[in-house]
Length: 411
Image (cartoon, rainbow, N blue to C red):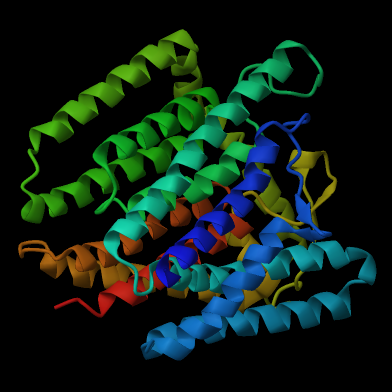
C-alpha cells in the first residue's frame, strides 16, 4: 500500500512539473516561456525544493566515491562564490538574474535527488512506467507546441514569428528532458516508444525547427540508442535486423518530411561554410571575450552577470548561446574547471565500462552505462548552442544519480 501511495505521489509530481510545459504548449505567445505557479510559488521551484531535500537523503543513504564528492562540493562552491560575487558587484536590480543562475546550478543537485526519489529501491517495472509516462508527455507537448506555433503564425497574430521554421521556445526545453530520458532508460523502455521518440525529434526538432545543433544531437542520440540496444541483445536475444529496419524507416520519414516541408535545402544550408562563418553566436562570444579577462576576473563576473549580445541587437542577456562560455562568465576558472571535470569524469567512466562489452551485461550495469551516455548530447549542446539551463542541469544531475545508484552492481 505504501509503495502504491509513493508511486501515485511521483506520478502527480511528474504531472505537476509538466503542467507548466503543457500550459506553455498552448501559450498565446509561443516565443515566451511563462512560469506557472501554485500559491505564488513557481512549479519548477517546487520540484527544485523537493529534489534538494531528496538529494540530502541521497548523500546520507548512498556511499559516494571521492571523485563524486569532489563534483558535489565543487558545485556548492560555485553557487556560494557566484552569489557572493554577484551580490557584491551588481546592484539588487539584477536579483532576478541572480536567482535564475542559482536555480540553474541547484538543479544539478535537485536532479540527483529526483533520481533517488524515482529509482531508489524501485522495481524495474515501476521505473519503466514512470519513464514512459515522461516520454509520452514530452512527445505530446512537442507536437502540440509545434502545431500551435504554426497556427498562430498562419493567422499572423505575431509578426516576429519565423516564417520558415517552427520554433516555439517550449520544444527546446522539452527536448532537454526527452533526449536524456530515452537514452538513460533505453535498456528497459519499449522499442516502439523509442521509435516514436526518435521520429518526433527528427520531424519537429530537426526538420521543422531547422536547428543545426538539434540535428547533430538527434543523430548522436539515435546512434547511442542503437548501441545500447545492441548491448541489450546479449541478454534479450533481440533480432538485430530490426535495427536495420528502424534505420530505413527513419530515413524514409526524414526524406519525405524534408521534401514536404522543403527542409532539405534548409538543413544543408545550416552546414554551409557561409552559414557557420556568419553565425551570430560566434560574434556573441567575441563580444564577451572583448570585455572579459580571466586575469581580472579569475572567479568570473558572478551570478546575474549580463553581456551585450549582438543576437539581441546589443541588448543585455544573461545567457550566452554557446553554453560553455556561461560557466566562464559566471564562475571563471571554477566554472571552466567544473565542466571540464564532468566531461573527463564521464569519458573515463565510459571507457572503463567498455571492458564489459564482450560479457553478458546485467540490466543494472546497462542502466549505469546508458546514464553516462546521456551526458554526451548535453556536451554537444554546450559546445554548439545551449546547455546552460535548469532542465539541462536537472537531467545531468539525474543521470549522475542513476549512474551512482546502479554502478555498485558493476562486476
